[in-house]
Structure formats: structure tokens, C-alpha cells
Image 1 (cartoon, rainbow, N blue to C red):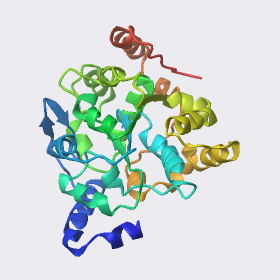
Image 2: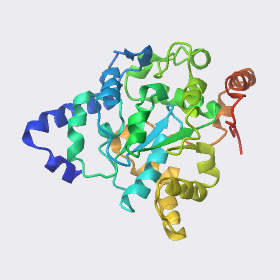
Image 3: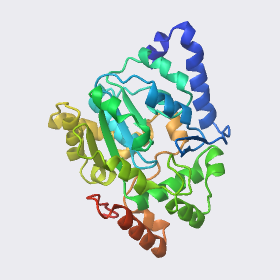
Image 4: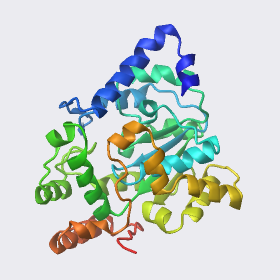
Length: 313
């Protein structure tokens, strides 16, 4: 990070400071009660539709750039840690967080990318697939990793995140009464980058259209939990990176949930992004009726696909 900061020329320093301030204000509790919209998709406070629009229309994509696509609370920070180990070696060098998370902060931040000594770049996004310029990514030889998690654990983790987040935006944007939160969630009333009436399975369906394309890989949070070494090897093969058994074990040890919780950037820890990370925690909060409703809604939405979730182990 020091090399990146020192490489920024004086005329760009203001952009760096402005970007850092935007993120620090957001993390430190300054309420951002402004939601934005692009193409009918509603962006929660703290995320910027104009930034996503700029990335789609104007941002150049370097050769072999990697994109991690996910719905909130499905494991992107964990997967990013693994991918960073694969791309950048055992030191686990990672991108400047506001630049890595595509739709956070103002679009001027992208002027700093050329000074970031990280190749290939690795971006994270919660956007649905129609707001990501997939043609541009494929043309550049870019790779897309789509992360899935069972929706019962996802919604419970999402609820705890919104409830415990150290900033007021989540309290403004979402009801923190669990029954109402769940009801709003499955009716597509929450502001989560989707159109009104759309929710997690709609996000999945958008990306599912590209599941068999050669530059797209799907990975399940639950598979990472059950057989992390196997999934590290799958990711390495997809990214054309050779790893032996020793390196796989090193990556596994460096990116377990507990290690990530201890070593992640301080701003990520402030956000309570790492809570429990277990499979089946939904049973602690979700009622039988809510569980059965979720089963029905997911079957209605995804029953025609080969998407299969693991809800407990």
C-alpha cells in the first residue's frame, strides 16, 4: 500500500484523499441516507450508481482482470482472500479496498488505478450481471467468479450485518425487526442493487445465463467450507495458476475464516463482515414457516436450473 500511495502524483492526491475520506466517513458512522438509481436498479446508501455507470461505460479493463460477483453476504471477502493469495503470492497483497469494490465511492477514484502496482487487478461487485460490461471483460481476457451461498444463511447473515453495522445507513434503508426484514427481503422490497420486486434468486438467474461461458466460474460458499483444498485447486485451474499440494495448504491456512477475521483490513472488521461463517446458522433465527416459504420461493425461481443449495451439514 505504501508503494501505491507514494506513486500517486501530486495532482491526483486530492482524488486519493477524497476517496479515502468517503470510505472512512462511511465506516466511521457518518450517515449517508442517499440512495441512488441506475436503469431501475436501486443502490443502497454508501454505493454509487454513477460509479457503476462509469465502470460500465468508460472504465478500461486490463488483460486478465478478475471480477468476483456476489450478492451481499455470500462470501466475497473470503473468496477474495483466496484469489489474492493465488494471484499475488504468499504475501497476500491486495488492492486498495475502495478501488477493489467497484461501486463504492465516486468514479474519480478510477483515475488512481494506473498507479496501483497490482497485476492482474481483482475487482469485487454486488451488481447484477446486466450492470456489468461482460463483453468488455471477455474481450480483455478477464475472468468472472460468481459466488453463491444458500439463501437461508445469506438472509440471516445479511440481517445481522444490517443490525450490527456501525453506521446509520443500514438502519435507514432496512427494517431491523426480523419478521419485517424477512418479509421485505423475499418480496424484493429491500435496496440491494436490484429492481423493485427482485431479490437474491433474481440476482442468481442473471449470472446463471453465463454459467457455461469459458471465462465464468461458479463457486459455492458451502463447498469452500466442506472441502477448501478442492475449491482452491478449482480456482487455481480457472485462473491458469499452477499450485502444488504445499501451496494449497499454505493458502488454506492463510485464508481460514478465523484467520481472515483476525487479519482483514480494519475497515472491514469495523463493518462486522466476519461474524460466524457457519452453515446452518439460519436455524437460530428463522421460523419453520419462514424456512418453508423460502424453500417454496427458491424452488419456484430456481427449480428449472441445476443450482442446488446445501442448508446444513
